[in-house]
Amino acid sequence: MQEEFERNKVWELVQRPTHQNVIGTKWVFRNKMNEEGSVVRNKARLVAKGYCQEEGIDFDETFASVARLEAIRMFLAYQGKFEMSMMGELTFFLGLQVKQLKDGTYISQTKYTRDLMKKFGTEEKYFVKIPMNTSVKMDMDADGKAVDQTRYRALVGSLLYLTASRPDITFAVGVCARFQSAPKESHMTAAKRILKYLKGCQDVGLWYPKEGGFKLIGYSDSDYPGCRADRKSTSGTCQMLGNRVVSWFSKKQNSIDTSTIEAKYIAAGSCCAQVLWMRQQLRDYDIEEKEIPIMCDNTSAIAITQNHVLHSRTKHIDVRYHFIRDHVEIKTSPWNTYISTDKQLADIFTKPLCESRFEELKNELGLIELS
Image (cartoon, rainbow, N blue to C red; front, side, top):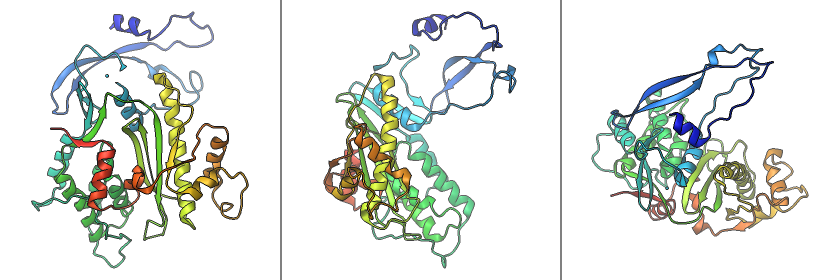
C-alpha cells in the first residue's frame, strides 16, 4: 500500500502548521464483492479521523463528495487510458456491471434487471418492442381507479435506477414518475409496459468502443407541449464523447411555453449547462474542448441565441435560460449547429416513438446486447 501511494504521489510532506490542529488517519479494511455477492478481493482505505474535529474550531461547514453517474460513465468511456489495479479487471462498479474487452467496454445492469423482473414481473409471457405506446397520452386520470401507491412508487423508483445504463427507457420512466402522488390503473399499466419491454431485452447495455475520438457533442430537443396534465413541454438532451453516449436526461420544463421555439430554446439552455460541466470534467483527462457544438433542429431557436436584444418573443423567458447567449458570444459554447430532425439523437428523450425510429436511435446511442 505504501508503494502504491508513493508511485501515485498521493500526498506531499509539509511543515506542521502551528495554528491548526492536525487530524490523524487510520486504515479501514473491507471485503470487495462482485455482482453475485461473492468476495473477490480485500480492499484497504486510508481515511481521516473526522470525528476528532470540532465545529467552529477545525471546520465551519461540511460537505459530502458524491460521484455523479455522468462522471462515472465518462471515466468508464476513457478508462483502456488509466493504470489499472493489479487485483484484476474491473467487473462491478457502483451497481454497474462492466465488461472490458479488447475493442471496448460494455456497461450493463443485467443482474439488476433480472432481479427487477422477479420482484415486479408480470404474468404475461410475451414482451413488447417499445417501452411506451405512441398512442398513449397520459394525464392525471381523475376518474380512474386508484392503485397501491407504495407498490407504484417502488416500481418507478426501481426503474429510475435502471436508467443509469438504459437511456432507452428514460423518457417512459420519467413520464410514469410524474404521477406518484395519486397513481391510477392507467399509470400502473404504463409502468408495467416498461417491464414487458425489458423482458425482451434484459441483457442490453451501453457499448463504449475503444477506437474513435473524444469530441464532446451535445444534442438538444423538446416536445411542445408534451404533458397533457399541465401542458408543459418536455426537454430531452444527450451528450456524446465521440460515438459514446455518457450523459442524458428527460425532464418536464418548469414553465408553460408559448411556442415550439421557446421550448427548444429552454431545452438548449439545459444542455449548455451540462456540456460546460462536462468540459470542466474532461480537463482532468487532459482533454481541452474549446468549441462544443450543440445540435438543434430548430433554426429559429438557434437565431435567438445570436440575438442580444430581448425582443417580444423572448422577454417573458426566465433570465436563467438566457445565459447560453453569453457563452455563444464568448465562444465557450457555440450553439449554432443545425441538425435535421431525422438525425436528432435527443428525440428519444422527448416523446414516444414508433418501433423503427426507436430502434434506429437505440443503435445510434450504442445500446446493444452483447453475445
